[in-house]
Length: 382
Image (cartoon, rainbow, N blue to C red; front, side, top):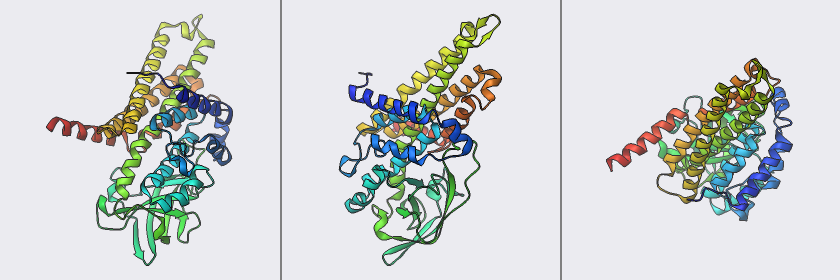
């Protein structure tokens, strides 16, 4: 087993880290405070190949794997968690069209997405269906060469700023097999948006309800065959879970560095904090837990790249473990700052607010346990 990154992977990681250090970190606090969505900065990541990381090269993608994506998002999130998280969603949308759509559809949309001429949002969750995604109610009824779309999607990152919405809608009967995937363009008649949600974190990206009221969508904007949408959604979530876990890992890495810097200068009881054995133990545990999380994330990414049978289980394991660990490490870093950690003059409270949602989205960590247990019992009973 070779745990060393290749020279190419190290170069990719270094490029992402430099972008995070120079373009994200200096502005993250201001973006959070002013609720600014830095579209211009996000679009510059396309120049680095970060808008279609695991999309094929013939439509402008970089053609890399899930491990490289994890390296990139881990690095970007050290600068700004919320911005990195939006880029993960855009990548999932681009990949889904590249992988699941017909050749005409992928060639129409993917070049515009990999260049970030268009920004995209993923629309699965509804006001009445979150974890039970197959129970979604948004319906698309065929009318000639269009679908007429009615319903609402909730907690949509990037709405209303995004240009293209990858929508899961019911074209058939109840259950997973009645769901299809449609691409809805910004400006489509019948498409509207709710107010920007008042969130705990992720202030530097908009989040809103997306409404469809007799919204007409060309049949040519369907991704794949009717009834395959839920399958596409679940395929996308395996990688999405790794991406969002990577943002927790990167944020926690930045929080640990902040704690190391602070404990090196802050003094109490006649010594620097990092000379107090109790706090040394805390720092040691934080570093150890992060390394364990990193190994689990990279292994799951490798399994997804290799398409091994237990990849879904490992993606769920990694998402649960890494996001829980990331939150715990950021929380400990805040604690090491004492009262200062609670102030907005320091980055820890923003980091804590931003990583908390990672334990909820892309499948709650309770659903991750359901997936792992189901796969575990299936193996046991085989």
